[in-house]
Image (cartoon, rainbow, N blue to C red; front, side):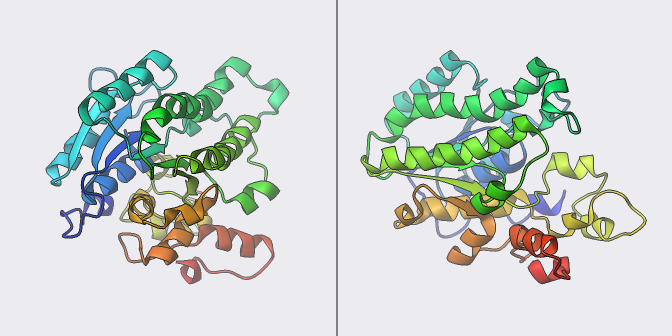
Amino acid sequence: MTARDTDHTRPSARPLEGRIALVAGATRGAGRAIARELARSGAFVWCTGRSTRSNPSDYGRGETIDETAELITSEGGQAEALVCDHLDRAQVDEVVSTIDARHGRLDILVNDIGGEAYVDWGEKFWTTDFDAEMRLFRAGLLTHLNTAHAALPLLVRESGGLHIEITDGTQDFNDTHYRESIYLDLTKTAVSRLAFGLGHELAEAGGTAVAVTPGWLRSEMMLELFDTSEETWSADALDPERSVPPADFAISETPHLLGRTVAALAADPDRHRFNTRTLSTHELGRVYGISDIDGSLPDAWAFIGAKEAGTPVEASDYR
C-alpha cells in the first residue's frame, strides 16, 4: 500500500451528500482520485472508463474501472462503475440515460480522459504517423466534447450544476509555452478553452464551468515511467546519479491533491466566482486551506516560472 492509498476514512463532514457526480475517465490516476474524494465528501459517483478485468487498457495498464468503484465502496462511499468508451456517442448517451433513470439529475460532471499515453515525443508534426497520433487528440478532446454534449442537458435541469475540465497547465503557462507535440499542445489548450466557452453558456442556467490543472503529478503511470515509487520519488528526483525522474519531479504532487481541491470546489456555494477560469491545485488549495496527503501544497507552476527566469530555486521552497 502506498501513501496515496492511506487516509481515506469517511470524513465527518460530507458537504456533497445527495449530490450526483459523473467522473469520465475514473479508471486510474487523477480520475480515480477525483472520484474517491468526491465520494468521501458524500457524492454518489458514477465512474466511467474503458478498462475492465476482462478488457484491459490498450496501453498496458492494469487498473480497471471496477477497482475504482470498489475502492470507493470499501471506504464507505457510494459509487457505481459503467464501462464506456467516450469516443462512442451511443455509449455516452447510455451512461447519461442510466444516471437520469436512477436520479433524474446530475450535479457535477468531471471530464478527465487524457490520452497522454499516446504522445510520440521528438517528432515534427509533418513526420508523425497522423492516424496514430490523432489517438491523443480524440482521447483527450473529442471524448470531452461527446460527454459534455450528452450530459449537459441533464446537468442544467436544475440550477447550480458544475462542469470541470481537467487539463495540464495554467493559462499563463500555456500561452507562453509549447508542449513539444502539436497534438498534445492543441488538446490541452483546447480543453481549457472548452471550459471557458461552456462557462459563458452555462451561466444562463445558473451553472459553472472551470478547468483545473495539477502540477507534476505522481500518478501510477508517472511513477512507473520514472522507475520510482511513492516512498522514494523525492530522493530519486534529487539524486544526481539518476537521469530519471527529472529534478523537477521533486515538486510533484499526488492525484489526491487534485481530488481534494475538486471536491472542495464542488462544495463551495460561491464557486461561480471562478466561472470560465483555469485554476491550479495550488491556487485552490490556498483558497480552501487544503494540502496534499503529506501536508504540503506544491506550487509547480511558480517553481517552473522562477527556474526559467534564472532565479536560484529549491523544490523544498515551493512545497
